[in-house]
Length: 345
Ligand code: ATP
Image 1 (tube, rainbow, N blue to C red):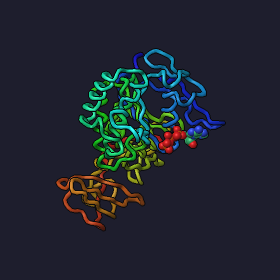
Image 2 (cartoon, rainbow, N blue to C red):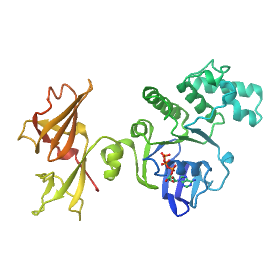
Image 3 (cartoon, protein in one colour):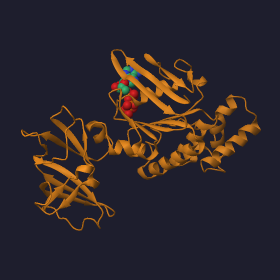
Image 4 (cartoon, rainbow, N blue to C red):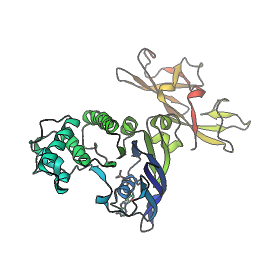
């Protein structure tokens, strides 16, 4: 297969498996985000792909070649880490040309490639500037250009944008994705930010405790999270218990919802329903009655928090869809069955 295959990879530190029997196929040219909470093994997996950490078991295959034990410098990779590690005493151009110079490229070839890369990252004319005189976002782009100087087969980034402020970070996510699409380079990014992963990735790989919990396109993870952990981790969602009552009917927070079925063989599960799918109506007209406890008006959207059956349910709507609800108001809550995803608890 063209692309990267990770076959049953495990990394143990003593008795502890930081990465536990992970198998993943990364098609050539795709953008993959490894997503998960701190300590779930994302960085360790990336470091094994980079050759910075030796797997305890399993194999890594790149474009048909087994690279499991190949030294990093022979893997044809570009890497960017959170710290960036630009050389502070060098100019932008010399930073970018560094690997070319080590390879013995002629001055002319170096200059040509630096110009190409600078134009690619929208910093033409910056070659002679010291890197210390750049903004955070510009430095980020130089680190990316430096990693791409040798046209690597695989581009690996570990939390590359986490040092940037929120606005710049969002702009850089789009820029990085567009650059990756233009170059068609297979890219793997570690992040713990679900929005970042959803913005950039073709394939989001959600990890927990050293294992892959779900690997799918962002929209599929969003619509059909594999379990309650994934649903909770990938964003704001309402997680509510669904149970079978004595008569075998499904209930959510005590209200009968015959359309929802627990997975076969289970009497209890969790439903995930996005706040934008929750509808508020008049008391007595929904499945549950509740009381509005907080309203967050963000201009374009209004988030309403409703306390119902001892649980807080969040509903999101545009001002046009939901004129005026007040704190303390009684409302009915509708959870349309077609928007409820039943997941394992
Ligand atoms: P973060 O987002 O905090 O970087 P992560 O998901 O990238 O987390 P890893 O850095 O891969 O997590 O670490 C996974 C687990 O392996 C953690 O519990 C960590 O403490 C452990 N670990 C990582 N490197 C080593 C090491 N060299 N020796 C011992 N344990 C390690």
